[in-house]
Image (cartoon, rainbow, N blue to C red; front, side, top):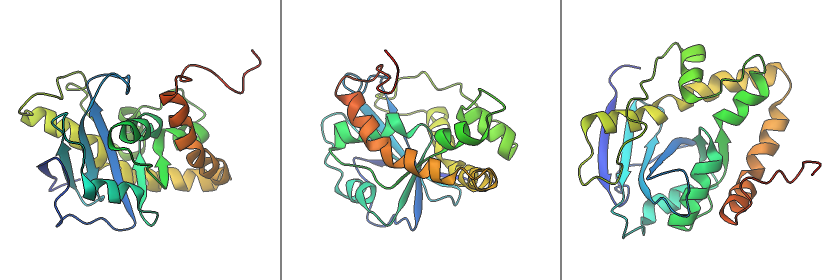
Length: 207
């Protein structure tokens, strides 16, 4: 994808940024426990090669325009591992994100020939794009984000639209689109269960 552009915002999206039909979203936090590790950054892309990064200071999560976007029923939100991001966004922004599409779930339903469903793996196989994960473990609460951090954060959303297109074709080919749709619809409940302390419990397991 050429002519990529990264724009950093503070506290919320500006009124000039508008998304239609679908938006790719990811988050960066201080860790993997949404009840402990605060939301530091939200990344968004309309699939046009531009990434908008919204940085939070840890005190103000009002973000009215971002919240309106997340709750807009006419715009599909594309995530990779939506379970975590939906929970984080609900915990810190107090908003239910819907409707949702998860490339990791779609991958698990159709790429049954592998157990590698990370974003890096998907981009390499389906798009021929090699992602760098060098900044995956870094301080996202830093007062100033480095150029490398911003590039890493942007890469997590810039390719999700193209991945969705490829995965949708595979879901249709294997007649599993209905399974994906049902799983996506359950994601908010799964996120609520995580926030309620049921993260490690398999509710459908025998024991």
